Amino acid sequence: MQQKGIGITITQHILNQQRENPEATGAFTTLLTELLVAGKVISREVNKAGLVDILGDTGKINVQDEEVQKLDLFANQVIIQRMQHIGQLCCMGSEEDPELIRIPSDYPKGNYILLFDPLDGSSNIDVNISIGTIFGIYRIKDSDHKGNPTIKDVLQPGIEQVAAGYFIYGSSTIMVYTTGKGTGVHGFTLFPSVGEFLLSHKDIRIPSRGKIYSVNESYVHYWDNKTKALIEYFKTRDKETSRPYTARYVGSLVADFHRNLLKGGIFMYPADQKDPKKPTGKLRLMVEANPLAMVAREAGGYASDGHGPILDISPTALHQRVPLYIGSKEDVLLAESFISGKRS
Image 1 (cartoon, rainbow, N blue to C red):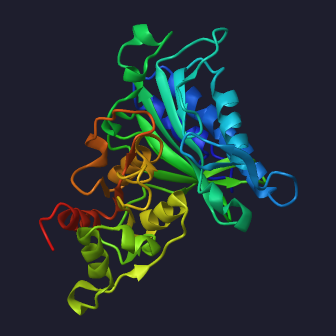
Image 2 (image 1 turned 90 degrees about the vertical axis):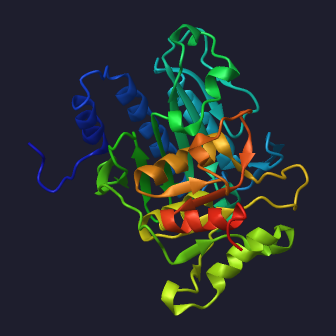
């Protein structure tokens, strides 16, 4: 019997889903449960920022040519250390590590692959803006490879994810996740007083069309004419289509996405010519775009690279970058029509 005053915990929710699947072994439940512990530890440190020496950069540059923040490094280490021993993973991949993260030989191996961005939006840490952890989970196709997985085992299209979600560390800590196949998208808020994530956002559905567009408009001079025309469309006054849209841009992908997931709208990070090393965009397909694309799809939204579904892209590299248009389905389809040249 549920205790009065205490809602459904995420552990209860995961177990309920497991019972509805007669083929479930409990391995996936163990994986998610341990990931929750990592999220709680990271949340605790984020909430202590400014009180202890965890702010600022480390002086190191990661594989993305970005400064590594102290909390970036901490979050990465927490996830690796918490997840490597559970016996359900055959390998991991992180935004912060150039190669696959192998499971130590003295730990048992499982059939799952965890890909993650340990601390999205970390450039905002010092100014107390919401940041987050993004994750996607895959199943290895050939279980005979789990003892020594190759990069080919990992490079699966996002449509093959068996679960995806994110933690957002803001005024409260929320974990949003989906296991696909019509199970819905659910949000759980961490209640520090009981140390548990409790169901706070049941069966999230993103509005089919929103009134918010999120993009870094300071890059306008680096965009092509199709992208400029799209942004101008959102800014143009037209009563029949409820324009102009409202501009909202946090600069933290997980924060912008979370707001639009609940309220409707579109987040955009187009390809640009600002950095010749990154002509196809800045965001990472495997650890950012794919997980959020799965969440968007299961909530009734859509994610595109401007020409087709993000989830259908066959990856060629662990740290592959893509343009990203994600959010309310009608808004993203509209953006796709501009970027693909079907509309001007």
